[in-house]
Length: 74
Image 1 (cartoon, rainbow, N blue to C red):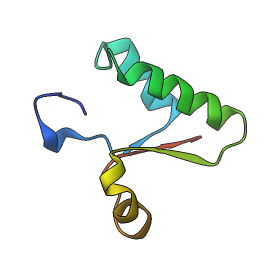
Image 2 (image 1 turned 180 degrees about the vertical axis):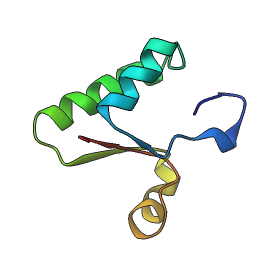
Image 3 (image 1 turned 90 degrees about the vertical axis):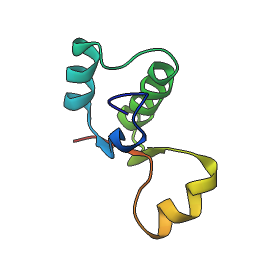
Image 4 (image 1 turned 90 degrees about the horizontal axis):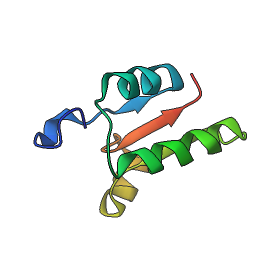
């Protein structure tokens, strides 16, 4: 999320460039940093995409629209 206080500010897709920009701006902090670092490590090791979201939304995320953040190479 761009703002932890705004549930509507979810970043639905993130690539390495966007990640670096958000990181430099200070928009990312605390608990999301290890998740994103691990996601990009997986991407850079050959995983096609990583989805960060709530477990309760898993089926919806695979069948419909993504409620979480989809991490991609580019």
